[in-house]
Image 1: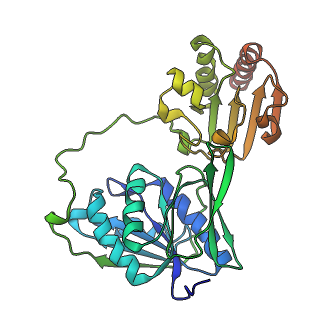
Image 2 (image 1 turned 90 degrees about the vertical axis):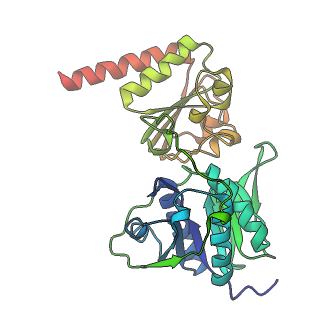
Image 3 (image 1 turned 45 degrees about the vertical axis):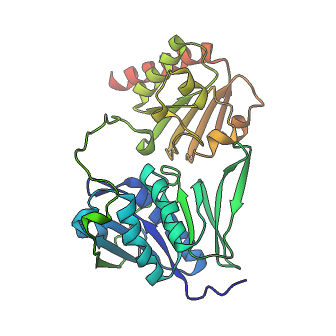
Length: 338
């Protein structure tokens, strides 16, 4: 094996929107902390933008030992060409061992740009992270072969090790206010000619009032629902529980829910306290994106994979079960308020 003893540190590239750190940055900082503790490394977070010093310090209680803030007014909005020019020399100088990037649209654009310049590979859309302590390697796990297997990918011959990790897969870490760390500002020299695009206007999209990625309870349904009328019961149950609504791929393809509510390999990752899997088989393509404390499954097939994964498994026909469940919850809520 090649000697990479000069390469140190697990670096997390922060994801920001409107100058605010996105939740996924905290998730990845927490996971990087776990890896670093096993591998004997330090965790360094990297934020790119302008006037981020106050935001930067919030990552230290989440597990960062050091936060680098790469500043330039031209970096206030994502630009692949400019971010590449700012980050590649930085990582070459630091000799980073591992770089973790959120698999957001921006992250998926940035990772291959960096890898091309740093002459290394990228493991994309990772759903699990672990460490090989003997070899000092990060093990990047992700679904492969159309989601039928989980592939463990390592990079023993190149540094840095680079991967993009799905948002919402990992739990948000508890802040340890006793942790100490350092924030360092790094000035970046850029001119307008270094930009790949010129930003003219930002048009805000519609915001989900109860996004799955941050919900404590998610109610999701799959093939077990056979009509739009039946599907309304998923929303009714979610409203009663104050939960977010999710779905498997077939429901999204039917147009009953937007793609933004699809959970799984080709959708989003979730990490709620409670996950209701209603009429969902539990295929790897779906479950690789679920990291719930408690799984409650309802399926008429007792041998469906989800039934073995569930903490509570109910063998029942949804057509009969859902009205009973909704009725019972309504009754309990009325008792509580009477």
